Image (cartoon, rainbow, N blue to C red; front, side):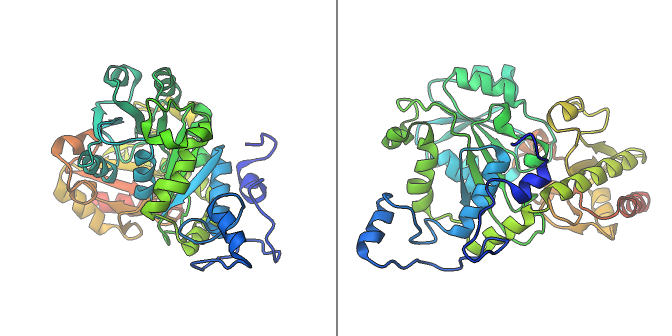
Length: 413
C-alpha cells in the first residue's frame, strides 16, 4: 500500500481504479456471455493467450477483472481470481495445489462449511491433518513428506482466535510449503496477511467486502512470492514455466476455468460498489462491536467472547496485528440452548440470518445451524456450544443495539 495515502483514499483512487471507455466513474456491467471479433485470427490469439482480450465470461470478464484488481491492490497481491462463492474460492485454491495422496494441515476451529469441505476432499484422496491450535508448536510435528499446504483463518469464526501468520509462515517456508489464509473476517482494513508472510489470501466477498448482503462471491489473491517446488507440488508441474505465478496461472487457465466456478458480472459489480465503503463500514462496525461487547459482559449469566475484551486470550494481539480494532463478530454464551433461543427471538433490530459482515446486525445460533453437520468435538473446537449466540454487528446506532440486547437478555431470565 502507498504509505502516503490512507485506506479510504486507496479504495477510491488507487492504481487499480481504471479509466473506462465512456468515462464512467464505475466499471460498467459487462452482462454478456461472449465477445465478438473481427476475424478468427484475432480470436485464436485470445484463446492461445497470445493477445489480451475477452472471449467468454466464464473465462474472463471486464467487470469481474475490475473487482479482482481492486481487491488485489488492497491486499498487496500480485494477482487475483474471482470465484462464484467463498467456498468455491477455498476449494479451487486447495485443488490447485493438491491431488490424491496429498495432505493439508489446518486447525480445528474453522468455519463449519470449511470443515465440511475438508471431509469432501477426503473422498478425492486429499487428507486433512488437524492441529488442536494453529501454533508453531502444534503444526511443526504434523509436517511430513505428503504435506502440501498449511491453511488457516486470520480471525477464526466464531472462535475468534488470531492466526500468527508471521511465525507459522516461517516454519511453512522452511518446509517448502505455502501458507493459505482465509481473511474474510479480518478484511484488508484490519490486516494484510501477505505483509506478514502469507502466500495466498482468500475471501468470501459475500461478507464484509460486499457489505450489503446482496450478492455471493469469493476471491483468491496470490502474493506471487512463493517459490514453488514442482517436484513436491506436482499438481502444478505442467505450469512450471510460469515460476512463482504457476498457482495463479493454473487457477485461471486450467482448474478454475474448467470447473466453471466464475463470478457473474452483476455480482462482481455489486461487490465492487460495496467495497467503496469498506473502510467506513469496518470502522463503525468495530466500534459498535466493542461497545456492545463491553455492555453485554456486565450482564449476569452472560459470558462474552470478543477480541478487545481484556480477558480475551488474544487481546494483546489486537493492537499488534489488527490496527487496534477487534473486528465485527462477538459471541456470548447464554447458559442454555433454550435461553439462547429466547434471547435471539426477543431481539428487535438484530436479524436472524446466517451471513456476517452485513450493514445490519445479524444473529444466529451456530450449534443448530452452521455446525449442524459437525461432530461435538468439532463444534467445541470451533468455540460453538449449545448455548452460544454469534453476533455479526452492523452499523446501527450503538446505543440502540445495546438497549436491544440488554432488554432481550434481561427478559430471558
